[in-house]
Amino acid sequence: MSSASLSPILKQATPVVVESASGSWIHGIDGRDYLDFTTGIGVTSTGHCHPDVVAAAQAQCAKIIHAQYTTVMHQPLLELTERLGDHLPDGIDSVFYANSGSEAVEASVRLARMATGRQYIVTVQRGFHGRTVAAASLTTAGTKFSAGFGPLMSGVATTPFPDALRLRMSVDEAVAYALAEFDFLLATRVHPSEVAAVLVEPFLGDGGYLAVPPAFLAGLAERARAHGALMILDEVQAGVGRTGKFWGHQHTDGLVPDILITAKGIASGFPISAIAAPEEIMAKAWPGSQGGTYGGNAVAAAAGVATLGVIEREGLVENSRVRGEQLLAGLRADLAGVPEICDIRATGLMAAVEFGDPTASAGGPDSVEAARLAGMVQQSCIDEDLLTLTCGPTGSIVRIIPPLVVTADEI
Ligand code: PLP
Image 1 (cartoon, helix red, strand yellow):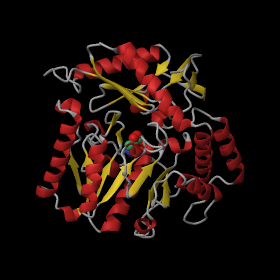
Image 2 (cartoon, rainbow, N blue to C red):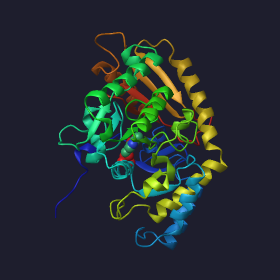
Image 3 (cartoon, rainbow, N blue to C red):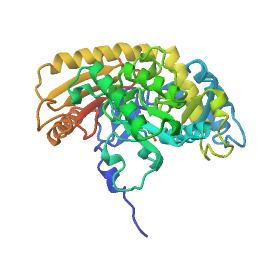
Image 4 (cartoon, rainbow, N blue to C red):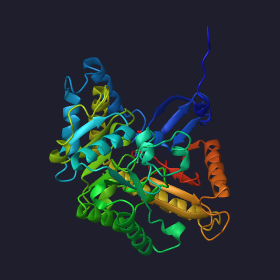
């Protein structure tokens, strides 16, 4: 008989082994209670094991667990589509489901290529769009996400992010610079008639827990439309209330995507993702080109319906906004003047503390030293029973991701 152990990658995870979890808390088998400000990387939006979500999933298990959706449709997916429709931007009226963020990103790329007959996807530097080979090809949040397993997908071009901190510019200057770079890309390297879509997160997730300036998003959307390309917004991490509005792009006035991608917080931990688009775009998908065996699973969809119900009934989008302001004020008050910290930010419950000195030639925001400090702080938090994550190009940013149900005391 052979024996098995976890892959070395999984052995690197935190030493916390969970016994059970509820709300904002993880109860470890070591008897300790951890305040979980990771939420499974922004997933358990209604907290761990919200009673309504548990009840909906349990009830659904007793009815039907799986019915492949291109063969037999089921009620939870119809209901989820209706509930999601209440939150989708005007004109975005058609929804297709997958299991994970990466699969939904790939579905959006396939759709954009089929709908336009063009090949290129332009992404923004420091974007994170997933780990499947195609999604990794679109990801520039860090080299670790694509090193060692190329060649990657072709037909991808990347344009700079208006990173005011690293560019040492005002936000307006950084936006003007980044939009000029985008124009330059389309004037010199990729012909506009070959661009199927511009793909961007409204808030950087793994790339830094950082708002993408609204003027940049608006400028990209305007340029995409002018060139006949689609605007794809990856709301996998920023959507479903995380930023204090239901969608991250709602922080940019008048911005409407052609394709919107959602996952993570939509079902409180059950694996389900979706792309949404106007039906005339969605109808351009070749039959058989989209979907998979488990896409839009019935139990996950029922959990999604329950999640949206909880978010609406308990006013969790507003809670995200208010608790986020409290968190930001507290972080700023407690950490003011710490020389190793260059930025403290939060929009809703998407909060980050960034290490490094942007004016230093060594020890800057992406330096080894800054990453070491962020890792040390994360470990110290675990020692104090608080779970956080790091992110950014080298891991020099501590990100704080409470559930949307977090209370004032817990903050
Ligand atoms: N897009 C964004 C913005 C994400 O944050 C993530 C995951 O963190 C993904 C896509 C990929 O999602 P998944 O890990 O479910 O494949």
